[in-house]
Image 1 (tube, rainbow, N blue to C red):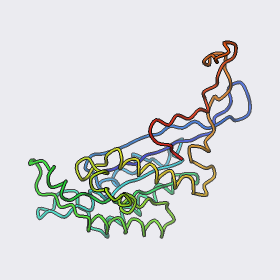
Image 2 (image 1 turned 30 degrees about the horizontal axis):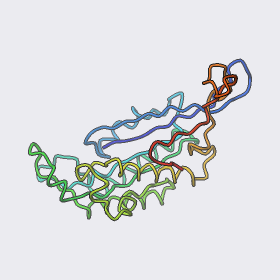
Image 3 (image 1 turned 180 degrees about the vertical axis):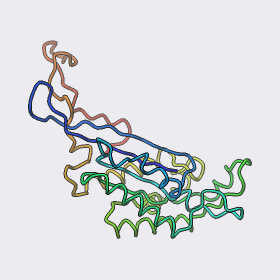
Length: 243
């Protein structure tokens, strides 16, 4: 599945002033069901045009889950041979790197699967789907090695998910798609990359200034009944204490 997550960050002039105050962010999510890297490179220029007025500050790309499926005898289906997958990912990285000097990239490698659970949950409308951890690992390692070669940050999902002893049951809804617990692991790994990367500006959420953070008489009233409380810098953690 094509899942580029684009983060657009741009310094914004202060209203009524000449300086700059904070950064505003727009996050664009794209998920195309059943897509592979071969299909993705056909629309790269449409999704990420080089002549766009505003280029993304960060693009997170995931391919490999569908590419790594076993081939069908009819020649159809999402399978992409490993050498072609590597070159497709290289083309994607090269295109994204050409957008601007400030565009940062994170690749997510192919995660593992629960083979038994996939077999149990596959609908009868599909022909036999070959998804194995042996294939997933080979595509994951290829993605990781490519990223090391071309200088792109990568999250090794194949290893990250398996750090939990109960990963096969806890990390998936159907053996393939990630559960809430699986997605928490992915988020944590991405945040680690953002925190550790020597990017300027830093794109970790704690380092991004808040837009319109000034006090306002329209804020909520404090317990003293006379002053207001500015909530713009408050952080709410509902379940996870994200770092």
